[in-house]
Image (cartoon, rainbow, N blue to C red):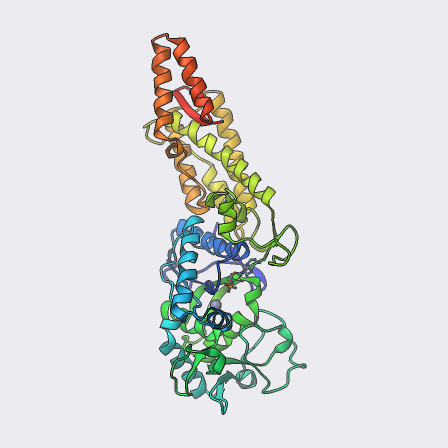
Length: 471
Ligand code: AMP
Ligand code: ZN
C-alpha cells in the first residue's frame, strides 16, 4: 500500500505520487523559524511534524531533499533589533544557533539546506521584478511594491486556494504592509517594503529604492530556487495557511515559472496547533514553554519528542507536564524491552519474521496515523515481553526483533542506546558482585548490592548474566 496524505489544496486524503516521473526524488519545503526568540513548544510540534514527514519519506525509500528557510528579517525581528540596539546579524545569530541546538536535542534530521532570507535578497528582487513585468505587482510612490490580487484574479487565477475568502468585503487596491494579517484583510500585500526610519540599518538597495523584502516572497524565492518552480510537498503550521501560504501560491504561480500544467506545490500539509493545559500558550498566562524551559525541568529531548509525536498532526494537541511524565514511562517500557532483547540476541545474526514493521507502515501510510503506529509498537513490546518471559525467542529471533525496532525507530527517532547510559563505575560494581558470588563470598556480594542501591541502581539477573538497572 502506498502513502496517503491530507492535501489542504483538495481538502481530502490523496495518494502521494511524486512529480518525478521515476517516482524517486521528492522535494519538501517546510517553513522555518523566525529567529527573533527561542522557539516555543508549539513551534516544535510543527517542526517535529516536519521531521516525521521527512523521516517517513526517507524510510519509504524516496530520495528526499528537504529545505527549511530561516526568516532572519521581518517586522518582529526589526522591532527587536531596534529595542536591543544590536546589529541584525548579531541579533539573529544567537537565535539561529539556539534553533539548531534545539533541533538536535529533539533528534530532528537536519534539513539538507537552510537558506537565510538575507542571503537571497537578489533572488527575491528578481522574482518581484518578474511579477512586475507580468503586471501583477506595482510600486507605490514611496518605493514599496505590492502584489495586485485584482490583476492576479483578472488573469483567471484563483486566490483563496487553501482557505475560503470573502472578496465582497475587499476594496480593490487596498493594501496591507504587515507580514501577518487576518482573513478579513484580503488586500494587496507587500512584496517589498520601502525603508522607514524605524528600520534603522536594516535595508538593502533595490530598483525601487532602499527597503527590505516582505515575508511571503522570501519563501517563494528560496523554495523555487532550491527545489525548482514546481515541487512535491510544502508544510507548516495551520496558522500559515493564510496569508502566508496563500500568498506564496499567488506569487509563485503568478511568476509562471512552472512547466505547463504543473502546480507550484502538489501537496500542502498543515499541522494543527498545540495548546498548553487546554489554553493558547501565552507569556501572561504563565503557560509558555520553550524547549529549554522543559530541559531545565529535567525532561529529555527524547521524552519531549515522544510526547510531540503522540497525536495525529491534524488534531489539536494538548500539552501538559503530566503528559511528559507519561512519555517518560512509555519510553522506559520500550527501553526495558530492548535491553532484554539485546541480552537475548547477543551477537546472533537476525532470522525470522518481524510483523512490527508491516503494522507500523500500514498505520503511517494512512495519512501518518501516528497513534496506530505507536499502537503497533506497544503491542510488539507486550508480545515480545511475553515471548521473552516464556523463553520463546531464540537469539536469531531476538536479533530480528531488534532489527525491526531499528527500522521503526529510524522514523520515530526516540530510541536511545540504554546501555551507554550505565556509568562505568556501576558496571564495575556489578562485575565485582558477580565475581564475589562466583567465589561464594555472599557477604561481599550483598555489600556490593547495597552499594549499588545507594547509588540508585539495582541488579537484574538475565539469561545472559547480571545487568544494572535504575531503581
Ligand atoms: P514562526 O517562527 O512564528 O514563523 O513559527 C514557526 C512554525 O511554528 C510555523 O510553522 C507555525 O505555524 C508554527 N506554530 C506557531 N505556533 C504554534 C502552535 N501553538 N502550535 C503548533 N505550531 C505552531
Ligand atoms: Zn514560509
